[in-house]
Amino acid sequence: MGVSPRPRVKSASDIWKRESLGIERSYSGMLLHDAITRSDAKEASELLKNDADPDYCPDARKMTPLMHAVSSMRRDLVRLLLDAQADPAKKDAMDRDAMDHLDLAVNDLRAKSEGV
View 1 (cartoon, rainbow, N blue to C red):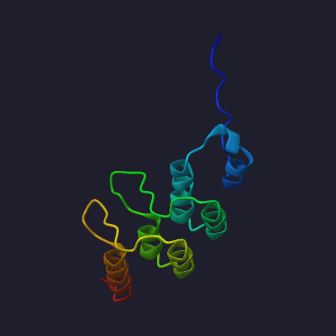
View 2 (view 1 turned 90 degrees about the horizontal axis):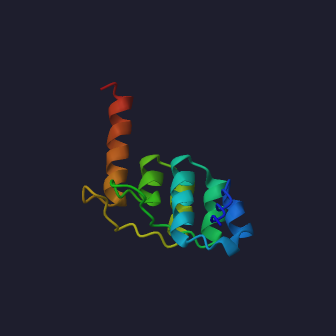
View 3 (view 1 turned 90 degrees about the vertical axis):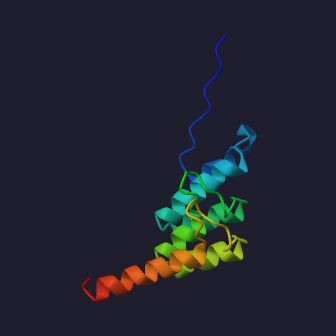
């Protein structure tokens, strides 16, 4: 007799409906990371209210959701993550923290506005 496949999770709200599946906090962290990179504040807020890890880094670059929010200059997402205790001192794979990502974003914006 084969093992039944797990039902596919289609949205953040499915996680809370399917707690019996044993979906780990890291999975909700992946969904949070995705919501932040898509600038989806509503979904990010829902995930954080339900204990998603605000510092989860799913790839080799080790960029946290906060780093992505800062890089995209989304103040609302930055506030949301800081309110959820995201760690601004956490480092990515290149040893940069959230403030370093803010500096990079500001410098990039300056260069674009100066036509460089």
